[in-house]
Image 1 (cartoon, rainbow, N blue to C red):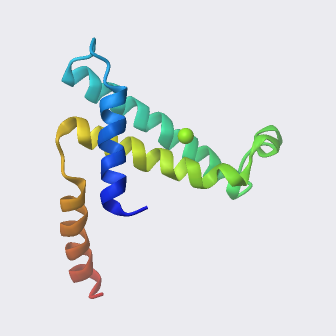
Image 2 (image 1 turned 45 degrees about the vertical axis):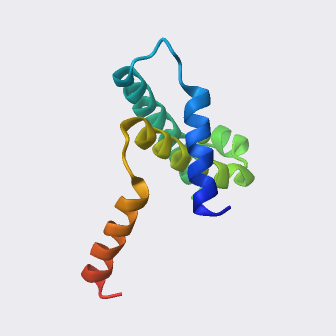
Image 3 (image 1 turned 90 degrees about the vertical axis):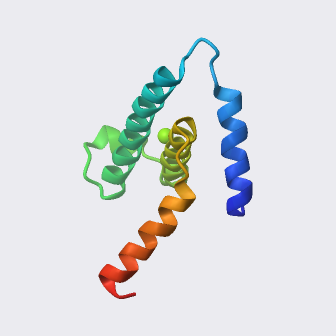
Length: 105
Ligand SMILES: [Mg+2]
């Protein structure tokens, strides 16, 4: 998927998920909590990936879900940015430049 298509998808999803009863501040806080939840799910799978969990959790672990857990974090992050009017693409571009300078890439 091209970045432009991904941005369109995030905008469409943002519109679909907008709850009219939520004001902007409440939506931002709800998405921040959701991001924390998704990050926790990814962290759980990372622990399982490293076999650093108790047996019951390792038995429930399905490595094929790992890419989707990464995707959940990325999508939820972009939805949060969308609700705050933050241009993540611009942020990534300037951050890449900083990192390139730092590591002389
Ligand atoms: Mg998830």
